[in-house]
Amino acid sequence: MKTERRGDGGWADVMASEPYMVGPGSEWRSELYRVAVDQFTRAADLLGLEPEVRARLLEPRRALVVNFPVRRDSGEVEIFTGYRVQHTLTMGPMKGGVRYGPGVSMGECAALAMWMTLKCSLLGLPFGGAKGGVRCDPNRLSVAELERLTRRYASEIFPIIGPDSDIPAPDMATGEREMAWFMDTYSQQVGHPVPEIVTGKPLVLGGTEGRDVATGLGVVFVLEDVLRSLRRPVEGLRVVVQGLGNVGAVVVRELAARGARIVGVSDVSGGVVDPDGLDVDAVFTWVAEHDFLRGFPRGEHVDRTAVLEASCDVLVPAAVEHQITAENVEAIDCELVVEAANGPTTPEADLVLARRGIDVVPDVLANAGGVTVSYFEWVQDQQKYSWNGEEIVARLRLQLQEALARVVEARARHGVDWRTAAQSVAIERVAEASRLRTIYP
Image (cartoon, rainbow, N blue to C red; front, side, top):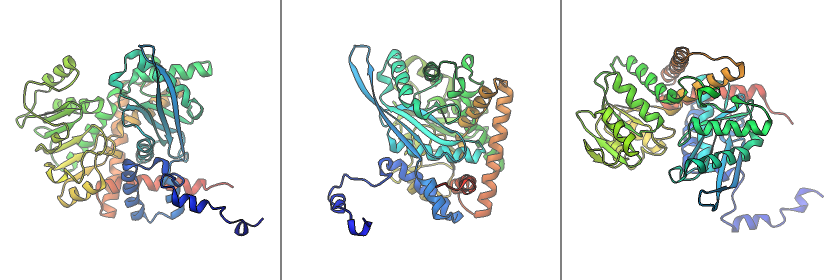
């Protein structure tokens, strides 16, 4: 029977009358994904990217949603939801972190997976992007509960991960402990140790020196090189860092050690500002003893997002996405924004910052140190050979310097902002790989 004679069987009316019905791919659409698409589109338009390649790179290739039970310490069984989104298979194995948080969703993972593709491409790494996580509040889970959750999540996504297909890594609220559990669970499934299934592991299990500080250290290296091009020293620089997690804490320590003045910091409990400079050692001692910055006895206490508005030379958002928005961008008082977090600045805020002459060093460049050292760890596990810490740092600095040089060249060639230049470099490489691999019937 010919299709035109058969008609649509009445489905057009159903689709029009049911607002909850979504089109193909719409399942992962979210505010963060909108931001990622907007940024991609600006660079793609600049490059004149053909529709076929554009369509292939805009949508994730695969997405898996899993619901699984975890027994709490009380004996009660609770159901958790986990995700793993794989953006592109074109460049090689996929790479991306695993995060735990109350807001983890497919849309969030889809956006982060796209950014990971661009990050790897910009740095010249042979990976496509992926991202995953579990929707939970890790602060309300015991260590034993976190282990059971991690192992069950690893088992659930086992069918789509592997050392040559998709290699997870630490992200928000996960670290080397969770990666050790993850590696052990995967290894038990296949019957032999597979250290290369994850990166960010403890050294004794095949981890690499420097991975725990790589993202924050990379932010500092990129900032140093940008300042060098501006002929400005780090010493005496007034810096605000939003977020005191694994990345933000490293940025604060490293910049303070280089003579910068840390005039504001924050964590999930709030922020502290002191124009004369905070005592960094006292801040970390307080957090170590009290778990949070809340109650720190010095400086002016502000809201965790209000710290972004503190006057400084360099603002480093190192917390979560969607922090500098149309609502607060006019209050931002800095000369340079360096994105240590993923997606902290919305497209609307980008336009205002550009109008005000505030440059933004984008996340795909600034925080790429983590995935770069993850790549080094994966290579070492594959080769069963390790490099020392000095070699890792030297390789990281070189990789970031080369990426920065490509962005600087693209920025001058196209006459665009840092973000569009960085994304254009990344998209050009992925697009070329897509054209060369073509498609098959």
